[in-house]
Length: 110
Image 1 (cartoon, rainbow, N blue to C red):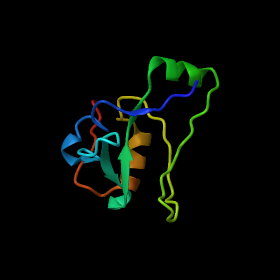
Image 2 (image 1 turned 60 degrees about the horizontal axis):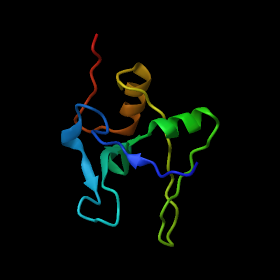
Image 3 (image 1 turned 180 degrees about the vertical axis):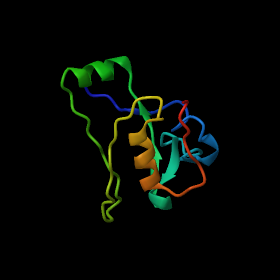
Image 4 (image 1 turned 180 degrees about the horizontal axis):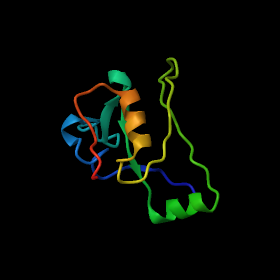
């Protein structure tokens, strides 16, 4: 299998839509990418959805590859993450606090 992952068709994190920035919104040569600010504003966090066949390929041992466009400049550090919904766990909240001091929070349903 060789397939391109598409950005998730929905919010990066439900409930935080008003803080999102959409990159390439008016650039038809690129896929629009919804992001939230991370690392205190010096990174952008995006979400990608997988099709059932992509999920099955990964379960069967396929790897995920990341192409980073650097346009001949220095390569910026990048991270890939896996997160289940909902994003209301203590692990997520700890990671989120380390990423940003933006004026939003994720509240648990307890």
